[in-house]
Structure formats: C-alpha cells, structure tokens
Length: 252
Image (cartoon, rainbow, N blue to C red; front, side, top):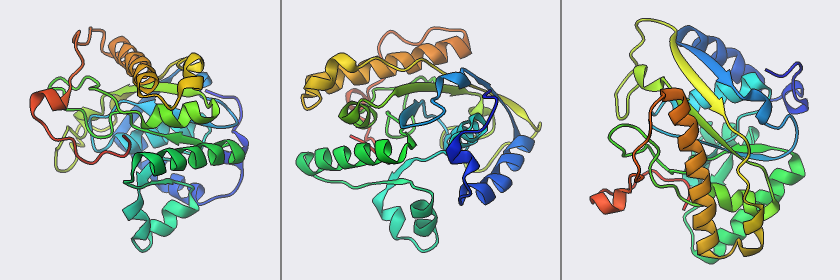
C-alpha cells in the first residue's frame, strides 16, 4: 500500500463522510486483500477497468481504491443525476454521466470526458463488460469499448483489475447479503497498464477499438485466472451468440 495519501484524498470532500461510513462497515463484512496497489497512479488521470459479477462489486472496488489512496469515481447513467439527493451526491463527488446517444455525439462526449479527467487529474472506474457477466462460471464476458475510448482519447493509463470473493456475500442476481460468517475474504488484484499506445492514431476506427478492448479483457481475465488458480474458457462468453439481451450497460 502507498506510504502516504494522494493529494485528492487529503483534500476535504464529500468522499470523507461517505468513506467514514462505508469503509468500516465493509470492514465488518469483508476482509479485502489488495495486491498491486502500487500500479494505480498516485496522481493524475487513469481508467480502472474491473470484472463485474455481483451487484456489490462497485462497493468493493470503491473501498479498495479509497484504501489505496485515490477517490473512487464511476461512470453512471445520466438519469441518476436527475434524482434528488442522489444526483447532488453524484455531481459533488465528480461521477461521470453517460447518456445514450448517436455515435457522433458519443465520440464528442468521450473526448470531453477524457479531457476533463486529465485536466482535474481524476481517475474513473469503468466496467468494460457494461453489466454483470452472463458467463455461467463468472468469468469476464465480451467487453465493450467505453473504457478504451476514454483511455485512447488522451493517452490515459488503462489499468485492469480483477476481484474475487464477492459472490460469497452477494451472488449474481441475489437479493440481499449473505453476512455469516463475517469478514469473508475478497482478493483484489491490480495489473500493469494495458499498452494501447500503438492504437491511438486509429482511435476512431472500430477495428482499433475492438483490438484495444480484447487486450483489456485478456488482461482482466489473466488477473482473475491468477486469483482463482484456474484457466478461463478458451472462448469468451458472448451474450449475443447465446440469445441473451445485455441490460444495464454503461458503455458501448
């Protein structure tokens, strides 16, 4: 773990009271072990891309990122920003709204969001799968291009993350938490930044976005294989080929 907190964590913000409540509470529920904390930049922009298989994942990831020393900001549906209180909290904590839009306006929005991350030295957490994995064994499924679009726009570090153990507390589509026994172990591993520098000049091409997304999903899967000590399926799960509709996605 870093020896000292990052500047954004030292600076008073709404994250302080939120963390004062959430971090101790999660400490009672889960024992989160973090490996590779030094690979998350102490300062400046980053795009952190974790795997996603439980509704509790965002809380686990947020606590891990806060413990490392950075403020956990997510991409959130634009409609959430219109909800009283919730919208205010999202805006005050610098969460990033995502709107359904045409390809042209989406590209423009991505450029703006990427530039703002660099300008303010902020990181953002983006689930590249866009929703909970449909893979029967909870391996990462086919990724979408939201995370890599942000990273490619301004050369922001694209960092893979894998976590495992959350399913013992809240399984996929489970209603409620399985709290007993308390402090169930969860392992979080952060990997080396995914090198997509050779694709920046072609960031507007679908082939380049597909290649960057494949590299990212391969990196996330490799980290999860390390945690689980087993090999993922040779072919990544694709909901489209299994007649499944993808819902709740936050990127494209």
